[in-house]
Amino acid sequence: MKKTSYKIYKKIEDKTIVWFEDTNNYLVLETTAASILKKIDKGVNRLQIAATLSKKTKVSLEQAKDFIVDFEKRILNQKPFTKDHKNYHGKDVKFPTSFNSSIYYQINNSVFKISYLSALECSYIHPKFAHLVIDTANKADYEFDIFIQDDFIYLFVEKKLVNRWAKKDLHYFQGKLSMELLQKVHQNEEEEWLGVFHASALGNGKKAILFLGDSGNGKSTSLALLQAHGFDCIADDFVPVDKKYQHVYAFPAAISIKRNSVETLLPFYPALNKSKEYDLKELNKIVRYLVPHHKNDSTHLPCKDLVFIKYQKNATCCIDKISKSSAFMQLVPDSWLSPKKQNAKVFLDWFEHLNCYQLTYSDTNQLVKVVSKLFKEED
Image 1: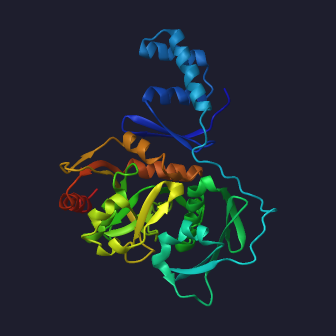
Image 2: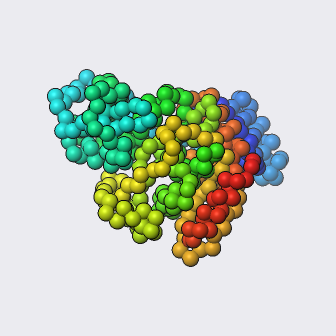
């Protein structure tokens, strides 16, 4: 077997999480499977491993050998955790001589100038940041250029090519642009982040809570409801956590509100009734955008609670602790996680100390009570 680079083992509760350096993958394994993997990595003879397994589990030696063969194949056939968009050399690209629009955005004390070749490119980025627009400035601190050429989306920062993406990979482009903004806003390079999570982050000025869940479960709607009751929106959809402090950092994009949530939020945000609706065909959803409320975009807060939230009509509000292995398997697939070895170790150490919950609700007042109690609880 080709030697695999499973560099980090982390026992959490009754499971072991293994990180693979070559694919940046994480696997949640039973104790026995983790033990086998460690032995394989150390070069222990397969027959010896099978004999030990056979004795321990009381299966036949042949069955134990077959299990190990299948197990090795599964490890070898892992695909990289995130799609590898290799950096395009840029030799064939023709930088536009002019752009349809250049819009200035202010985040804290920094001014960003983003130039769009046409209304199409603008529609991919601008709506989420429209609340940050300022009148044209004499000089921007940072300049971004976005254009489509030969069915590829190009991103330039400070006139240097970052990369290009096929249109079908629009969400990867949007993620990279957000990462570039994030680095500039917080003055942290990409390797200084543990990960970015597809979640909603709520704060009370002292700590943060992450809300997670499948699309349609109500993460953003819950965030908007709680914001209306005095909590701070730290970030929506794009939630970064840094390596140095393991804090959740603010990201200034607006809150995405799907069409079927507008009626629920109108009593708290009447302006939503007249706000523009965007048909995001590439992402298969129709949304409006709500301005986030937080004191400043430099905010970063510790986080010890992951809450998998679900709005369910007529449901009794309840919150229960869930296993960390279950939470981990839900958290990781929708996240960008740093491929750096040291970052992976810090990420696992951070995750080990998180509280993981499942929250189901239908009544907003009950939701506010439950979340308020979570914020008051000490670790």
